[in-house]
Image (cartoon, rainbow, N blue to C red; front, side, top):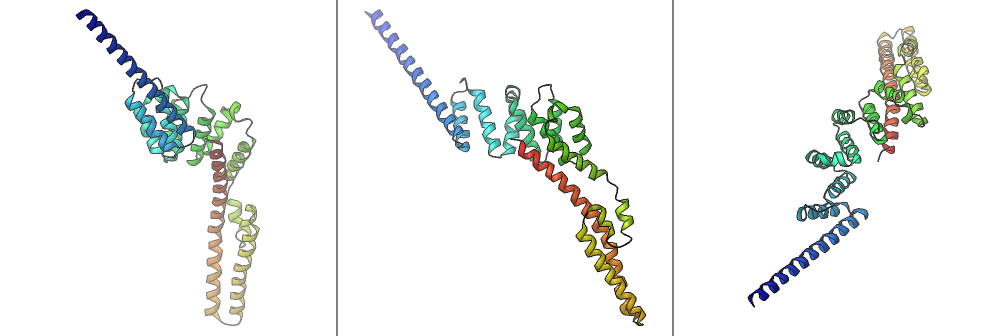
Length: 274
């Protein structure tokens, strides 16, 4: 009789355990589906909390690593780059299991102005199948650091990757020419006020500088003729100041043009990257 009661109790315990396990699995599946729905609905902050809750309550769940990656993805899309770097530094498995995580890591470092660290990570993880995004990111980093020679060498050494990108080839080539262009000719021509702007194709600045400085010098000449040396000296001094200032203006204008080329390239590559 006691044996029968013992078997009944054991059976009941097994059934209860199976029921509890089934309920736990059902709860996990529902929670996972809910977290995924939040992620795909772009409710990223909520999805992060839900993925963390699932992994905390069910550390052995089959989606544990995928959930960790989704957390990193969500943080990246929320532009919380510091948290992306922190998460990936604490879990290197994500980097090895999910190639895209490497891009998120390098781009987050770049966006945090830790560009040398970003470059170091990309170069240390180079391989034959490195993603196109990582290669464009490395070029972007070089341009941000004004390492134009390194960016240009990438076009040559990785021709298979960049050969179809005509705009990149064109604009980077123009930028390299602008950087290598000597300012000797504009500075020599500017002995005649304003002419130094002509090689830079800044015709409005050339005309306004020529007229303003020329007016100062001509006015001073007429004043000296009328025996008004004090006033004449004032206009000569003003003309010299404008004339010398035009040399500064020419060189600054050239720097602005170079910066415009670089900023355009940076903007173009950033728009290509996810």
